Picture 1 (cartoon, rainbow, N blue to C red):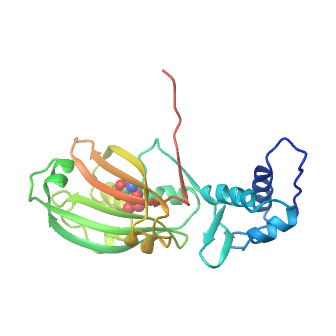
Picture 2 (picture 1 turned 90 degrees about the vertical axis):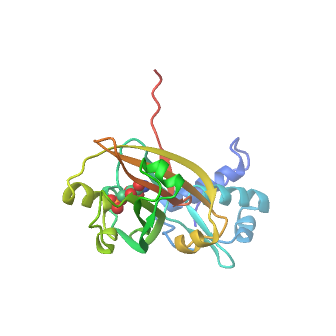
Picture 3 (picture 1 turned 180 degrees about the vertical axis):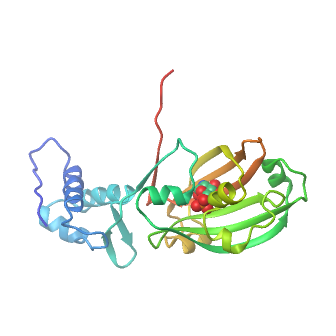
Length: 244
Ligand code: GLP
């Protein structure tokens, strides 16, 4: 491993270590999945405090460059996927646009009666039939998100488990010939609950992004209400702000 730390520099030492490790990752000298030297080794090599090394590593973990595995060490991560917040896109489209292979594992698929909360979201009567599906969204074999989708059954009465394991938007647009128009989406910080952590293969309590989306057809009718939990170590959302 080659990078220098200049103790006379105005740049803080933790920052130099952070940048040094980052450059080794971007040059490919450290490969995804490779273990990096321990905190102790880095302290000895650069003659700096544990706190300094830890700060550098924490920042890189938060940015998705490194992953800590309890009891094992710190490894080079995959970096974060940068996801624009402008277009109304599907998971399949998003991953394909990055050259990744999207797949899903369907955990649950059933018909339920709309609760008061869901009927309000989907602008239908309480107790009307909904299709509920829970999917693990995977890209290149890595679980990225866990989604619970609710659709008025009336709109998609022939929806099957097989279709639900593939792109929902593809089915809606190409098979059902329904036109998706816009969506309301909220995004908030959260931590992985036990079940979510297991599904997403992260630690319980690890940071996640909780997203809710209600998608509307051109007719104005809500098509879906979706709750998604995205891995905080793999996702970064990005939006352009224009001052009016
Ligand atoms: C994203 C959205 C969901 C939507 C899904 C459709 O994941 N958050 O609201 O249901 O895309 O994706 P696909 O067409 O791949 O099934």
